[in-house]
Length: 492
Image 1: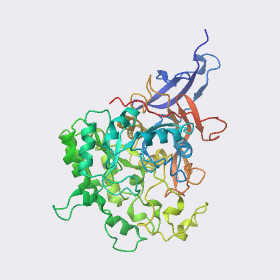
Image 2: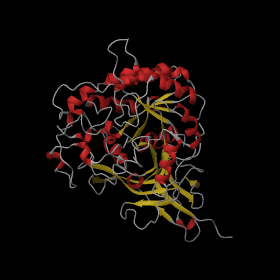
Image 3: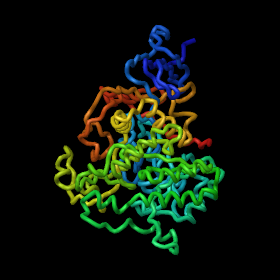
Image 4: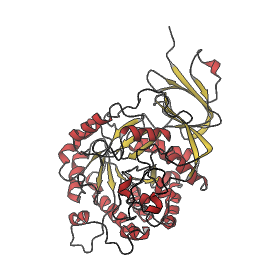
């Protein structure tokens, strides 16, 4: 009887269950699962002749990253991004699973029909595994349970204008309806938590969520003008509103996406201490950029909530490094791209890009908000974290273990354990590279990271035991994409 086909990966530095150790990992090429782990580097002679075997020492073997916040925008805005380009960019950076947000595709993932359109568009295009969030908008409460059954991993809503008309903001009444529908379902609610605090108690939240951010005071091409229009009070007020509704569905996990303001951390911490099931994520850009360093007109940095001051960034890092006591459990990209012309970059910045970018006035208010970074996150975090004592184990906790748990995939993803998918990133933690068009594999090469030197290079990316990317050869002649669509019912 012929032995079942396997592949073997080994390294003297492997992150297993949160600790670095020597290890040899055996992955079935039939099931794509890890079948054995040995806590030493075994020689190739310990395996049947012809078994694919690589000892990656001294490079790190990490679990494939799970990026739990990505906008792939297909169908409908495929000129912004798409499954093919977005998942190749993910693979370049050791990301083996992405969870696609319900906007900015057209239609959005707010109905089962919309999800089916997205699944059809994704078929055969994904180089890594892809899961989906559903969306909550006014009037779609009747769709939510069916979307759970169809396999979405959670539901996102906006408490302020989303920027696209097909995904309007919700009121507290909409949230109450959603909580009623989902109270006992295996899912979670995610909130874009910005709201304009009321001028008086007599104003209802339907007014608040429909208003635009504050009228700018100052030049529109200066970042501080934009930052002042979306102060931290927007986040703290929105989070307080979410917490005021939490008792309506006490078993339903709540999650704050892209937390930016450190002032919100005590609110969430106190709620957790009182038993509220709420978590938060932050993003690579909040941990690597600061308002003081953003040039006039460089709208590549525009996102919402905004990148805040250096002191705020330091506070986010301090919270992350509190370990298991941290309010912030995950770090994600929030990759939210657009075509370069929508960034309205001024000539001084647009002309510095090797690709043609339509010039504009650098208006932070008119430009599209979103930072492009999928596939760069591991290197960004490693570069910024080095000066703060961040370890490989920390990165795995924030970007693999906890993100997989957040989306209900910790039985399958996020760690290197027997029975889990053989998703692996081989990481050279000493090498460096400059971010340029050839290292930004997402569709539009317009990112604030361009020109920056990052430390840490992904040498190989493996999805369920199949090598999908190699730094020296790219995607080569690897044939068809092997990524799966993760549509199984969430278990918890």
